[in-house]
Image: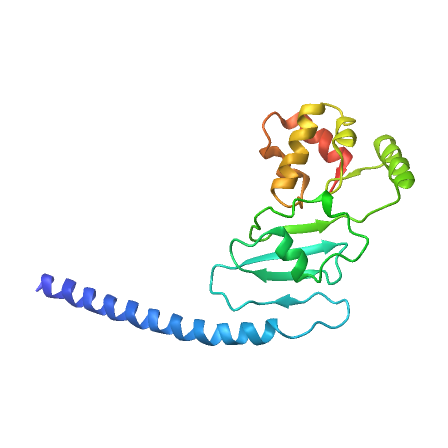
Length: 197
């Protein structure tokens, strides 16, 4: 009698899984059509918007900000690169300094891509000097020389930080830098005091 109960449970479980798979397929098909329709609509104004693609459940959602024509939150297929996200956001706005980010970096879900803005050379040098003495340095556009001015950061670690930032297509938080070898708690405190996202 107990064996019969286990068999019945197994049959009911198999039926439930089959029904669930059929439902997921039906919803996925309808969602793909809605995603294509929603993704093809043109944006209006400067309000943030959410664009969907017709790819399936392996998409990544990224926030594109900075010197792009249409900043916002976008859904892109898995395996997309930073350059794809910049294109989806309307491309650079003419003031972008694209060499400040790694366009070839693979996108990660939840990532923020900040495209830095180009500034005249004189004001850049003045801003770098002022930032190193007074205010925080921008994590998205800090040069190795600027990072080298932070207490506990040498030229090698400054280079590692820039390389790490480029590999990840930008950074949204100073806390992400604790993944770099050689940056300990004391250095993280100095970085938090001198850098801003």
